[in-house]
Image (cartoon, rainbow, N blue to C red):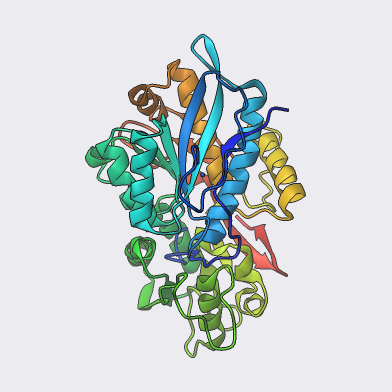
Length: 407
């Protein structure tokens, strides 16, 4: 098997996380770089033609818990692609990714994206799990006309479309998640709910979408509570170090201490305690959080490890293989990991369909792809660059520490 052509930054697996924004709602380096960059691992085909992709991920800092997951999945899919390489026109090209650790810093992410395009001359960009870092890369990608496939949530990443012609997003649209969540709440007979949302752009997007969806569903939004911003420099609670997901810790704390019934994130026995696509990180259901979130519901793409969607389609079989290899190598799989795998495959498919690695042609063929990926179905179009289909979303419930699909 060919060696994966990946350059890797030094990983700090336990950083601080931010996982979840509307927490409730919704939902790597080539040539040596300064100090924290590791030496290249090598190329699958030294001296041969390549498809070169620049990757910006939160391998340290407050987004590390999600960024590290994506980097792991990226390695597995990269290895698979380089077994036979990618047919581009009359050549087979090795895929090489240049991974940068943006340290969860939007300014650093923007500078790295600029260097990847201008100095390393990558053909496309992918990455970032935080909305803030994604928005920083969006400006660079659009200005330098380089396709960027984002792994972060937030509808503003691809809107307005006239200013995002080179930008694509894999995560579900906030409005789709919010509508599914509102229907769930309404079906449980709840008339008033409180919304617990993370700080930042993702939380802002979720709050807007959920408020609108609840109005349509006839459910009163009693109040909105924003979680404290967490980061590498944020003080940890007294007597404890930050877990991988500090936002999950704060959410669990609010659930345990809530004085009033919360139909959204917390509530008395029998109430709907629902969360979103970014609230299914492992640490959300670990330790002291476990009891608080038991019975919670999550709206999430149908790619959670326990999903019953694991059928016999080509994509389902590929998903099983990813799950098997991921668990074998890393001990467990998060529902977020498949996004990086899908982004890499989408760019490779665009190069194959375009018979070229020209950035303009890659952009043109990215926006015509309709395909089933690891995380769900994508349907891109010239008028829609947020490709996750709403039918890819399912409702899950946490039972004895595991997510089970209920609809």
